[in-house]
Amino acid sequence: MIDTFDLIDLLVVFGNLAECKNYDTVSKKMHKSKRTIKNYIHLLEEYYNTILIYNTETIELTEKGREVYEIYKQICPVLDEIMKKVNEFKNN
Image (cartoon, rainbow, N blue to C red; front, side, top):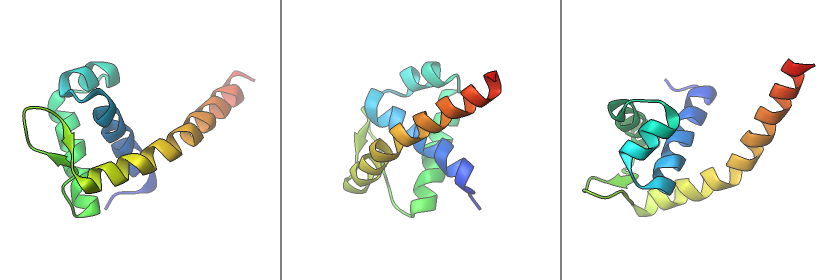
């Protein structure tokens, strides 16, 4: 079972992959192995019970993948704001 925090992590990896369109780039950016990135995508696809990324040489989102990515783009600024506040709390 995926909890809310795990889902956020999976969505962030997915969002980065959708933007970078390259497993190696996301792997380096997020300091996670390429295998871990692929596992995260697989878990997210299981969670949504749908394929989000076509299994091809290049990263191409399915229709459902594009829908999930649009949701990610909406929540990403909110997550960034939360992280800024958390860091402010830590520093005070």
